[in-house]
Structures are given as structure tokens and as C-alpha cells.
Amino acid sequence: MTKLIYLDNAATTKMAPEVVEAMMPYLTEEYGNPSAIYSIGAKNKEVISKQREIIADMIGAKANEIYFTAGGSEADNWALKATFEAYGKKGKHIITTKIEHHAILHTAEYLEKQGAEVTYLDVDENGLVSLEELEAAIRPDTILISVMFANNEIGTIEPIKEIGAIAKKHGVLFHTDAVQAFGQVPIDVDECNIDMLSASGHKLNGPKGIGFLYIRKGVKILSLIHGGAQERRRRAGTENVPGIVGFGAAVKKAKATMNEKSKYESELRDYLIERVLAEIPYARLNGHPTKRLPNNANFAFEFIEGESMLILLDMAGICASSGSACTSGSLDPSHVLLAIGLPHEKSNCSLRLTLSEDTTKEEIDFVVDKLKEIIERLRGMSPLYEDFVKKQKKKEEE
Ligand SMILES: *Cc1c(COP(=O)(O)O)cnc(C)c1O
View (spheres, helix red, strand yellow):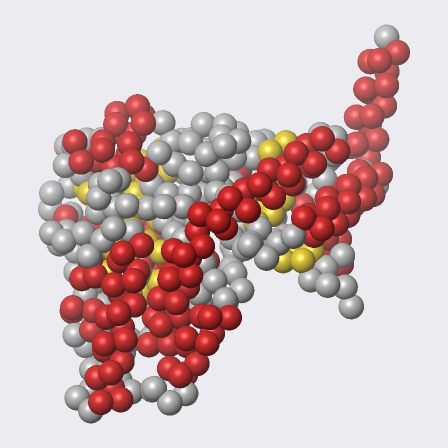
């Protein structure tokens, strides 16, 4: 059995041992409902408050501005749908980008059917939103700007502080999907004028099925999930106590290790990028060369079909992804790669490798060596590549 090399940390991460350990009592003996009067329940209410403080502190928010959800997708849905519901009288215009996660894009499309008007901003070849285009898109009836903090496919980090300043200047609410950025890069909601922010536990070594929406005090959105009075009447449902405890433990760990971890990962990422670009012909890096998540590398290889590459990598024990997890399995080119201007045939052959603090240089070397082999083999079978090489030779002879 070959050892597994997991380089798909943008899709999900392994839970940290301290996260599992922190959760264990709440999966077994500490099962009380936090709304109960008796002590095994009431104690859990305090435990939740503690986690809320730890998490709020990570983004410079107050504990009562953090609302737990069942993950990043729910937080994204909530931010968009509830803003449209609460502020629809003021206006029906929402601004977002073409490279958002589907949790935003599909929600925006749904809202269009409910009467919303949505502007989907273009991005440049590195995946950056233009501040001029953003400001020009604002209308008197614009109620929300939603721009992701960092992209999940190509890793580009958006100019969130500048976007927040523009939103504030025009009196428009600003939401950011920070699911990829949270725990990887420093975030301060006040400094960036963020009114709402989505995050998720399983992207930073926490459990799946837990996330939160930060809602700045004064933002008047209501609950999407009706029922009990949990989360200060803004999100009904018995609290996911083990999930919240695990999320808190993951955030605590991220806070303590973020600087060191991102330094380690970005050095290893740069080493990976350098080797791939130097040793594999007709390869390019997707996403911004420097303004990118510390753990993200995304490449396009010409004359390669992404699915075949992933299968061969899998046979070598390497977990990677092509495009995003949500679109792999379908042959549709990634909307993100199309938005940065990659033509269809090139966006079908993208490879995303996302590192963790457990990734080693030996693993990266093994992956690059395997990748070289696989790409050579696949190109060897490609009539397009054969044609291309012939043409190149002819050109050289002329
Ligand atoms: C993973 C991800 C989501 C969805 O989060 P879940 O917790 O899996 O629902 C949303 N946005 C981005 C940018 C993501 O990477």
C-alpha cells in the first residue's frame, strides 16, 4: 500500500488531534441540551459561549456578533438571502464576482429569480477584482457587495480592505466569504469594514458541518431557519455542541500557529511552483503570483486532460483536485479558470495542489517527479501534442 499524500486541503482538512480530543466528551458524556436548566445542559451553554469568544477574537469581532451555522454554505446563503429579504425595500441590486464559490453564485442566481438584480464582476488574469469597476457598479439601489476573501481554486487574495472602504463610503453592506482565508491569513472585520463574514470549521482542521456567520451589530438581517430561540433568535436548532467545541479548538490552534504555519507552507508552495514551472514544459501558474493563500498552487498544463491526470495521481497515492471539488466529476470547465481568461481546453487541464502543515519537502519532490512522468505519458498518447511537436520542429527547421 503506498502512503497517501493528501494535497487537497482546500476541499477539506484532517481534524487536528487536539480538536478530536476536545470534542470527545461532548460526543459521549456531555450530551445535555444547552437550553436546559439542569446542570449537564446548562454547562454546555457556557462551553458554547467560551468558543464564541475564541472565534470572535480571531477576527476582531464581539462574541455576540458570531452566529453558528451548519457550515460555510449555510452562512453564505444566509448572508445573501436574508439581506435581500431585509433590505429589499431599499433596493434590489447586489454586486458579487464571477469567481465566487457556488454557495454564493447559485444563491445569487436564485435571488435573481426572486427579483434581485445581480452584477457579477470580472476579474483580471490573476483573479483580482478591479476596485474601479467595483465602485462604478454601485448604484443608488445597491444593497450588498459580496466578494470572497480568498479564492478556493486559484488562491488569489482579494483587496478586502479597499473593497470594505468603498462599501462604507457608499453606505452599502459588505459580506465576504472567508471560508478559505479564515485561519490562514489575518482578518480584522473593523479594519476591513466587513459587515458579514462566512467561515467553516472543516477548512481549518476542525469538524465538518459547523461554521459561522459574523453579523456586525446593527445589520438587520433575520433568521433563515425558524424554530427555537437559539443563537439570539437568529438561527434556530439545538446547538451542535461537539461541532462548536471542535471549531473552537481548531481556531485556538490556528491562532497560535498561523504565522509559523503560513511561513512554512508558503515556502514549500513556492518550491513546488518553481520546480513545476522549471521542469514541466507548457505549464503555467494560475492565480496571483504573490497575493495568494500560503498553501495554494494551481497549474494549467497544455495537452492534458484533467481527469486522466487525477486518476493517475490517485494511483500513485496522491490526492489532488482539478478545478474545484464541486465541479470535479463533471467535465464542465471551472468558472474561475474561465473568468481569469483561460480558454476551455486549458481550463480542463488544471491541477490544484493545496498543502498542509504536515506536508513535507520529500512529499513535494515525490509529487513533482510523478507529475512529470504522468504528464509525459499522457502527452505521449495525445494526437494534439504530437501535431504540436511536429509543427514546432518544422518551424525550427525553417
Ligand atoms: C468550502 C467552501 C465553502 C463551503 O463551505 P462548507 O462548510 O463546505 O459548506 C464556501 N466557500 C468557500 C470559498 C469554500 O472554500
